[in-house]
Structures are given as C-alpha cells and as structure tokens.
Image 1 (tube, rainbow, N blue to C red):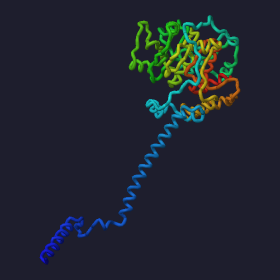
Image 2 (image 1 turned 60 degrees about the vertical axis):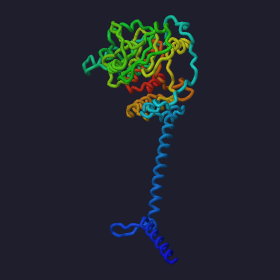
Image 3 (image 1 turned 135 degrees about the vertical axis):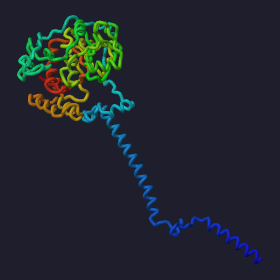
Image 4 (image 1 turned 90 degrees about the horizontal axis):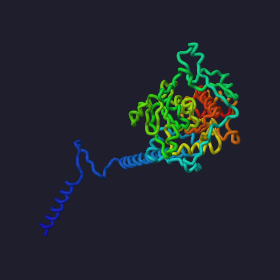
Length: 422
C-alpha cells in the first residue's frame, strides 16, 4: 500500500512537472519572469484607448461622408429651387454638377406649363407681306469708322467708335434713324462669298452658333417637310470650331463651297473681331438681321440646345398668333438686372469690377430696380431662344442691345433690360 501510494504521489508529481513545463512561464535573456497574471498596470487602458480611437475614426468618417452627401443633395436641390436666393448659389458649370448630371443624379427640369402649339405645320397660315412699324420706318447703319480713316488706330473696331452723345441719341425714336450696329467696314466677322450668295435666298432662318470649339451641331427633330423646304438652317462658327467639328463629325461638301453637317449649313465667320469667344458669339445671336439681311423671320437657339419643335409652329405660336415681332423667354429666377449682376459675380461668370462698373453706369443713368407691377414682367431674359420678325423696330432694338454688349460686358442679360427701360 505504501509503495502504491508513493508511486501515485510520484506520478502526480511528474504530471505536475510536465504541466509546469508546458505553462507559459518563461524567462527572458535577463532572467525576468513574465506571466499572464502579472501584466503591466496600464495594459487595460491601452486596449480601451485603441478601441476608442478606432471607433472615433469610424464615426468621424461616417459623419464626414454624410456631410458630403448632404452638401451634394443641397447643391442639386438649389439648382432646382424656384427661390432666387438658393438658385443663385447653384453653379451649373461646376465639375461637381457635371459629374452628378452624368451619373443621372440631377433631375431633369420639367416644363412649368404646357405650351399650346398648333398640331400640324402644314396647316399654318403664313402672313403675307411684312409688319409695318408706326414709329421707325427706315433704319440705316453706321458703316465707317472715322477714327480709323484718320489712322488714329491700327484697325477699326467692330462696333465702331460710338460716342456717349450718339449712344443717347440712338434711344430717341424717329421715323428715320441711323445707328451703330456692328460690322464696321474692315473690322472682321466676314463670310465667304459662297455663304453670302446662299443666305440671300433665306427668308426664314433657324440659326445657331458654336465658338471656341466646345461642341458639335445638334440635329433638329420633328421638322416637317414643309419647314425643311422653307427654312435655312444656318450654324455660325469660327475657325477653331470648324476644325473641331471636322475632327469629330462628318462634313459634307456640296461642291459649291457649302459645308454641311446634317441639316445645318456651316457659315464661317473669318477674322473674329474680339479676343473673347463669348463676345464673338453675340454677333450671330443678336445681329442676325445684319448677317442675313434678306431674312424676314429668324429663330435663334444656343449651340448647346437641340430644336425639337417644328419652327413654323414656333413662329405661329409666339409671333403670328399674337401679332408680335419679338419674343424671348423671361429668366426663371431673376427679374432685375441688378439681381442678375449679383448672381453673375457670385458664380464668377465675368470680372467683378467690370460688372460693378456696368451696373454703376445704369444706376447713374436712372435705371430703377425692377418691381412687380411695372411696365414689363421682367428685365432679365433667358436668351437661349429668340424669335424675331426683322422689322425696323425689331432690328433697332437688336442694334441697341448689341451696342450695350459691345460697350460693357458680354453678359447680354445685363444689357437687355436697359434697352427695354430706355
């Protein structure tokens, strides 16, 4: 019994020794003993600190992403808002808006009201003759730059050397008037002889323009066979844009000097008179009656837009139905030119000092800020589409509008209201 007890004790001792050998107790090279039961006193705090830091980073990242998402949603909402303050914050030219629009996150604006167009272009009755103006019957244009003829400058200015007294006189209506209206002789913006010959036959014109090579022509849709035969579709551009179009789409040459992209005939303006493509783009936009003097009716659409309505229906709806000679949409947010000027400065659309000087002169000349109940529903147009009958009065308005753009800033929305006011 005693022997068995000793073997049993010895066996348990050996087992205990083996367990001791398998325990995590060890000695380092300096002979110090470490064990799980004897950790540093600050070890739990380190664990808590590390876990807290990770959580803090995750929470901060989530909050930052939510903040960015809210900012993007606010940006999209401000662009769709009807409140002028918020709409002025929106910058549709920004890269952020472009990316969001490409991703389909920007809702497309809907028509605010149905447009009662006629149904069939073939049934539209075209008025005979021209509308007669009671105030202005004969309109002539200044063609020579006297200062250039005296060799006081190297080249004539496209808009001429209009004095302040001439500018003031041009706003006083008479039956016969002579005003500055661009196209001073030898000042640039010249068309090729083949284009000049072609546009002489154009009584009905749909015109657009591309400058500085930013786009290619967009083909109209829903155009009736009658309108295709009746209208000249003219795309005015500079040499940079012509080169860009040649590199990106197919241009058809008709053998008579005419270049075509689909339904559009390309009309090249050689020797652009201005250094700014935006200012050169105002020449066809405002002075269509000078580029195409035989045209009786014209529809201007910006190069970035696509015509999806038959042009005969547009003339019938906006001119002939109400016996008007000039139609342009009002700005969807702003009514006063001073409000529009502030929005242009916020969005950095043009140099702030020049806009300030522009508005300072208008205030000095007595132009009030627009108020509800005035003689016009708005002083600020949305100039992407302009529909005109080229009567002397309509042409005079276009000349005076262009003279303001030539004198001040190329932001034509700032000048339109002043011509209406004067």
